Each structure stands twice: as structure tokens, then as C-alpha cells.
Image (cartoon, rainbow, N blue to C red; front, top):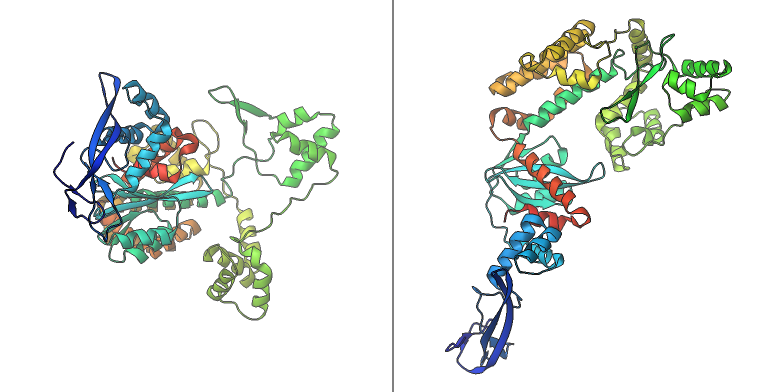
Length: 515
């Protein structure tokens, strides 16, 4: 291409002194399915500016090709779209079929380079923040979604309050932040965007309520997984799932609770009668290795206590007992002291330990009161089997109009056999009605009633809601929720699984951000 002059990319001064010619061979879009190469002949100029480091330069055509690129701009755009849409390996197979042979590494390199060159000047007003599992139970990241545009804004490989706060400081235009009940997100939003309104996600609030009810039901004497021993003349049946594999062993009839010592004595008695290990396993339903270990032992082996972690106050029990003997009995002060020594647990966990020290007889009295009048076990009227705490908690927060006939019968049985279930269901229905009708004025009275209910789990839920009261109020009045954020997390999981071992944070971010 012949031109009369050229502008130096270093100093910007135009030059009319031609130095020579420069040829470039560029990959272009295919022609009728065949690879096409563009031969581009450009003029080379001399820069006469003595202060400029460049002596010669080539004419630039940014609308055709980027500097030092080996393919045209329109071909680069196609490569980027293939990489963003399907990834590396599938993109390599597809782009080869249309006549642009290219490796998967080149496609991913183009994708990452394009995303890295994008600016972050986009203004976002309403965002949703949530965590995603890089490795479930071990490593978590953070995702930020624009709830108005329904697009991913950014992705972090860590879940930290400082990183979230730094992002909000770079985006001062954020006005509304929707999040779950995670404390690190609340802290990061408060530090980085104090002007924004925080909204606790309604789904997570109801989920926390269901979990609190499940904890309360799990502590009830009538709600246990299964009795340790069957009744006389009964055996454990092997239940198989629809795929034919042995899912678990379940008792055909539910018996009363027995102690671990009674189970050991029963196993030893069966062994002395001449039963083999297989028959004992079939009759009791316990693991084969446990039965074999008990047969070899003359006395019941003691359970090995695990070493307490830094999340447990028992890890600092020596220090706490020494400070307690010195007269320091304030929980908050002890909490700050052991926190400085590495304690990572909660204050309520420490308070449970200190409560036993303040009133050593309370635990014994409560145990006697509990065992004196045991609660009956709730049964499913249709099957005769016990109702698990998970099922009971799910039914407790489900309105009557959404229950099936079988579920309604279970709810009636739970109300009849366990009065505390009726109390929790009344509170749960009031809370759901408050969320649906947006009656924020009823929140204060509901929290007071939950505190006066006498149920530990409900009281704890009310205390945590009180600490995050502004976000809970906004959840009742505002229309925003984290539903779109959860959907983007599902998309992230699908992309992570399809990319196998190459799904690093940089590549995940490149594919999640909008094209």
C-alpha cells in the first residue's frame, strides 16, 4: 500500500522520508472452506525526530491488523468467539473444519489476551456477590454479577473481605449489594462501599431458618437416625436403590434407644451363642469391621477423642481455666484473648463452654429432665417409618397449600407427637408471610416472639438476624435477590467441568465475562 506519509507510533511526528517496504503474511477468513492468507506490503518510513528512539517505522493499519499480529482483525475476532463459546479443544476441532487450522493453546491465548486488554471502566449500580467452590469444602472464590444487565462483572480465586473491599473501592458507583449471610462479604461491602445498601438474599434467609429448625429437631430425643439394636425377633433388611446397589441398611421396625455398652453386650452374646460375623452383621446392621473388633475385645473399647482444632475453645482450655481461676469470668474478654492466640471459632461456641463452668449442675439437671419424660418418636402415618429431621425441617417451612396429602399427614403427625414442632411451624409461616407481603413492620415483633419461644435454634436464628438487621429489612422491602448470581454460579460449574484440568481462574474469568 503506497501512502504519501506516515505517523511515527513513538513520537507521533509525521514523516515523508521513505525507507523501504515491509511485507506481512496474515491469516484471514477462509474462502469457500479453504485457508486464506493475505500478503500485506506496507511502506517503511524514517523518523527524523532526534529525540525519538525509533529510527524507522512501518505504516500502521489498526482497522485491518493489530501490531505484531499474525492474523487479520476479523480473523482474530472469530478466534476469540470460538474460544469464548466452546473453549480450547472443541474450538480447535470446529475452527479446523471451517478452514482456519489452529491449536487449542493459540485459541486460549487469544481469549486471555483479549479479556486482559479490556478496561474496567464499566459502571455498575446493582451487584450480587456470592462464593463458588473451586474445591468444595476447601477452596472458595468470589463472583460478582451485574443484576441489572444479568452479566458477570468479575471473578476472584479467593473468598476474602479485603479483596471484595478493594473491588468496591474501584467501583464507587455501586448503590445496592445483594449477598448471602456470609460475614466476609458483609465486611467487605461495608469497608469498600459504605454508601451502598446491603440486601440479604431471601433464599438464604429461609435456608438459614430451615437449618435452624433442623438443628432443633436433631437435638430432640425422638428424632434420631435409627436405634442401635432391633427389637426381639427382628432383623435388619438390606434395602437396594433403583440402580440395584445396596444403599444402606435400615431396620424394619424402630426400637427404643440402647446404650453403646448394651450393643456391645448384645454382640458378645450372639457370638457366644455360636453365631458367625455375617449373621451378627445381618441382625444388628453394624459394620463388619466394628463387629470383628468387638468380638476380639473382652471389654468395650474406648472411643478415641480427636484433638481439638483452633475452631474449638477446648484447644485453649488450659489457658481459659488458668484465667478463670484468676478471676476473669467475662466471656467477651476471654474471647478477645484467645482470638489473639489463634482462636478462629465463634463467641457462642466459647459461651457454651463457659456456661458449664458457671453452672456445673445445669447440664445434669437438664439431662434428668429430658430423660424423665422422653418425647415420642414421630412416625410417617403412610409407611410407619420415623421422620428424619431433614424431612421434618423442610415440611416445617412449607405452606399448607403447597403440601401433598402425604406431606400434610406427616405435618399433622409431627404436630401431634412433638408440640415444639407446632411452635416452630407457626413462627416459620409468619416469617414467610412477612417476606411475601413485604411487611417490614412485623419483623421486630417476630424477632421478639422467636426469642421468647424457648427454642434454642430459633433464638439463635433471631440473634443472627438482629446482628444483620438492616440487610434483612432491605431483603423484605427491596425486589433484588441473588437468584441471577446463583444461576451464573451454575454456569461456572458447567464450564469448570467441561474444561477438565485447564479450568484455571484466569481462563474461567475469560469465559464467564460477556463476549
